[in-house]
Image 1 (cartoon, one colour):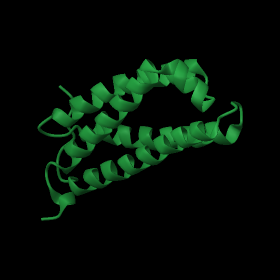
Image 2 (spheres, one colour):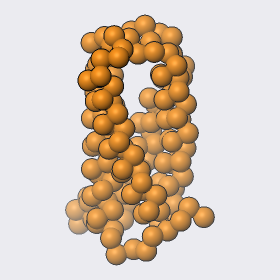
Image 3 (cartoon, helix red, strand yellow):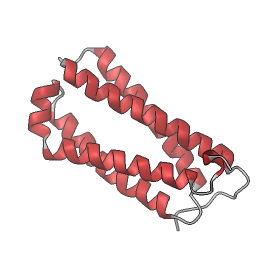
Image 4 (spheres, rainbow, N blue to C red):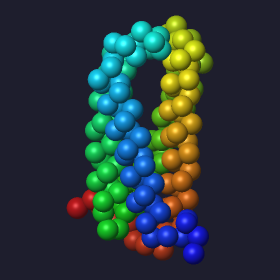
Length: 137
């Protein structure tokens, strides 16, 4: 059986998404000032997205812990992850902030990570297409 066909594939990808967002969010909240200085990104942007990522990580963990993954919600996560990647690129291309080389790497790493996760989530959804959509409740 392929890794992609495993019934745990989609929950495992959601756990990876939760972990990456929790780590990034925690770093951005705990070290907002230092990261702002190193990256050239504004502290309020780092704090705001850090808090969002922590909340999202909790929601992703909840989805991952379900016996049957909530397909509709994970579909929204896929769209959100692609949207996050687009927003990261737009932020860099816009030039509205004097982002440093480290800041560019920080933002591009997030964009790459969410694109990979979104693709894996989409693959998991396609592989489990036969199941009914489940709600969180």
